[in-house]
Length: 307
Image (cartoon, rainbow, N blue to C red):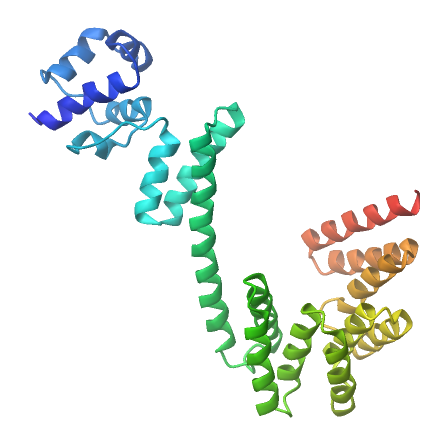
């Protein structure tokens, strides 16, 4: 008989302030059965043991550890498991338990900061995974899938901005654009980063130089519109977006940009109309989720129109 197991059965019960009768009632057994478990006469079966562990707010493994301790709740126990493993599945199990406590309004101060730090650990994990896979994506051959390659570059830039490493990514993109002056995508990425950094004057100068070299590049005109919008040159921004539409964009890009421009200008009806045109196109192509999101945006604009 495993003496550690038997000792822990009793230790965890007492730590929870439960009598043998209360445990028996919760597990639908009689108190003599609980007593026999703690005396080592018999042992719980494999189906009952997880129920006991949950009742005592420990894991099954804890029964077999010499120095196991009882936690205030099961969420805290799972938090310790996640701290050790850093496995996303353990994070999700732990989060579910904390969500139950939140719903019941039973969080202690310790629970609250525990809930914060499990998300902090998960945030760091997600950050590292995101950077790793964005780097892998931009190391692919851009000619294999040009559109998705460019989206990968854009999201990678965005990630660097979220990490407050905008100067680092801008320097990297400046070097790439300088080394590849005949590649519009490298310049495109740099302009995109300058826009996000709100360096509109630098972006505008680069745009006006580049568009002469690549006059049929719709992305450049989209960026030109975004730059002019940032500089409050609304007529010029609209002209850029319309030019991008004439050339042909990837996925209603010019309509989306025009809707945002009109909204900023306070012309909610025009913004609403652009959104509804987009929603119709999305729906006709089978993108119902995108259509629903755009129609929701249109509704918000209609509400503004009526105020």
